[in-house]
Image 1 (cartoon, chains in turn blue, brown, red, orange):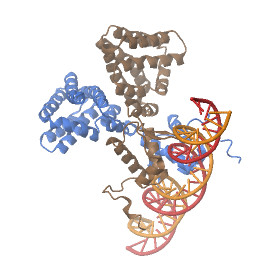
Image 2 (image 1 turned 45 degrees about the horizontal axis):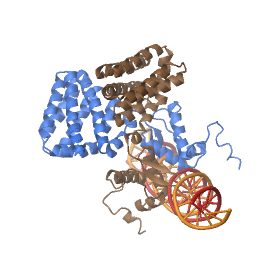
Image 3 (image 1 turned 30 degrees about the vertical axis):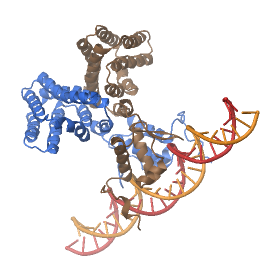
Image 4 (image 1 turned 60 degrees about the vertical axis):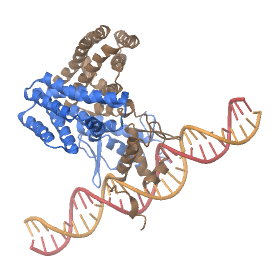
Length: 240
Length: 240
DNA sequence: TCAGCACAGTGGTCTGACCACTACGCTCAA
DNA sequence: TTGAGCGTAGTGGTCAGACCACTGTGCTGA
């Protein structure tokens, strides 16, 4: 009966569930630098004892931080802090795109238009010959097939290569979420069924031309128009 | 030995942990519309039986979807699907800002600069008198005090009011995460310590003037310059 | 009529057990 | 000496069952 009292010596009152508290505490440990990226945490059992909670609750906290991309659990090995890079932390961004519907999809496309046009403009100024070759590879592959699945794959890769050339990994990770495969598949399916393939190709060519000419403003306009087309189509779909 | 085989009649092979599968299945239920926003789910115990897993594992899945803003658990009442609005799903975005360090902070500020400048431009075109009054209220309050905490509060509210006037809730939710209190506190502290208060005020006034004049381009420039200032300062800090 | 209470139902927490996998060191033959 | 193979301790993954804390509701009684 002695160990039930000094549960929290600090003035940190018990607010919320114990799991929530555990999440905050671990997050704080990382935020304060007590746990470096890539570091290994104590075992679940030990952490539970340290924070004075059961292993079940601790596991829930760990699971929560795992889906957020902060921690990574390796079966049989241990629990580790991720590298905390943009890609790790923004992976969950895809859920937004997957579960958004109606007007929210238009808003997402608007955000994508803003970010992607800027990223494409940056890419026009910074892109290296090697990166440009990668872009061209996917552009050619996209034009060389009629398989919608394959076209979608190269379409995604085309834009991904451009965004990568912009040099901002955080922006790239956000756009990756906004262009997640399931999201594109949901929206583009309807768009492309209306025979928009030809237009899409022209727009891709225009973007490529701007990159080749290293013309940021042209690249921005081309990318904005490209996303804007889909955005407008979706808007009319919803207003019907 | 009979019940171990027919664990999954469907061709859905057992990949990943059972918890991960449960997360995907619930997400799918929502994505396919079988669970509407605001709907109440079966009890934890019942869900566990339905998916053929233990209550512990089911709880971990629910916890995961809770931190992602997809589900909401109410003690003693039940588990509900959130409204799946931008604010719900993008709340986790704050973790990124909280745990990012070094060069990643600059990238985040770059994203914020792009989005906030566009949002401010949109606001200049759309803002209503009532919304403008709200903006002016925080601008005045910000200039009327010397308490850093209070200034920070009104600073946040100032920008929040502008972004809200832009009319894109998704963008607003992302910017909210990028401007989270802890994030601002971490970066702003150092910035303001160098006597940047005066400059910040001038920039805020410039933004307000552009809104008042309903001049989107001026608003865009003013907002970009405002965030860009901090971005540049942070960049030089890191390069030392 | 309605304030108050009792209770069934639900999420929150804990315990302890066992399974599945990994990492590492030891053994033993080449 | 070396290295392939095996054994084992340790760790995350899963399960079962119990009890606690809170909510909602219907019943009771003034």
